Length: 291
Image 1: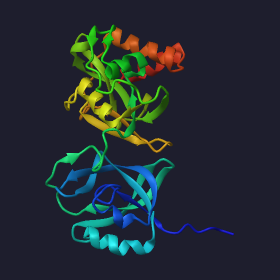
Image 2: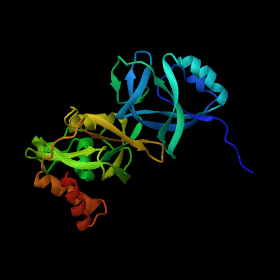
Image 3: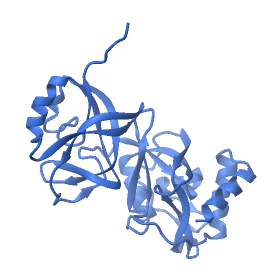
């Protein structure tokens, strides 16, 4: 006998979220976890946010299963047809892509674009995915602990909470290309690694569990300006329900070859810590050096 699943998916990103001012409206719904909506951007409209389509951006929110008859009250609350339009979208969830309804803002947003959840806790756990020198755990820990990096002679500031949430880390490939650009004073004015999610290819990343506050403190140390690592990018939702983030520049840089010490650090991290053979590491880095 075929079982019919009742209700539909709803993606929320503002006042309807848990601890939001309108969370009671979803009191009877089933919370399914966090979710990421890609190619949309969220704007601060004052008492509430709004999202509009914007290529390359993302919105972190929550996924619910609701009853069909809940839409009437939700549409009234959201001003469907006036302030917002209810639309079916695809979101990333812990169980893979899901089709869900959400509310899209109908006007030109006047507020600031946000790259963080509307309702957040600095102690929320996220995955940080590193793809350059942070493929080396020792190198990455300098940003957490505030210790000295022997490869470039620099002591990092560290995080207020200078301990990792978990000693366990994971590896994964993500669509897009690692490339080398800009000129870093830390690495003899040579290029360093950036991530371009919009270029064909695959990028190998090592993921560490950190708090949301630690993620922002890592960004501050990497360089929060638009030409360095000012763009936090959501890669998706892990199967454990935790968002996965990396960071890169706002726009792609012209190619600049990396310093020998920098590329050697990455190569050693690939072979000694991440399971690559020497030939595989050389091939991967050669592909990243030819862009």
